[in-house]
Length: 87
Image (cartoon, rainbow, N blue to C red; front, side, top):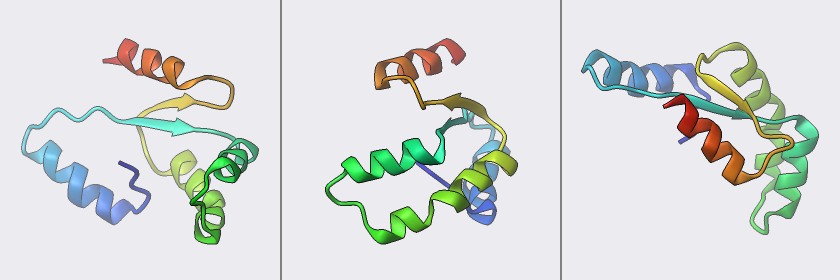
């Protein structure tokens, strides 16, 4: 799940934490160029998705704490391996 709104984040994740649910946070980051290339490959990408790129990059860079994994130059299996190592 991707949450970029801090209010919703606090509402969802904050409540889980308050209820003693173990929450593991992983933030998959990539450069703007990589994100645009990935959106270009999708058949269902909308203009709205492209318009959100800068906002999302800045939000995850500045507002959320979690294990950040740069996905620019790695494949999906590598992302999974990185996450498994952190569990």
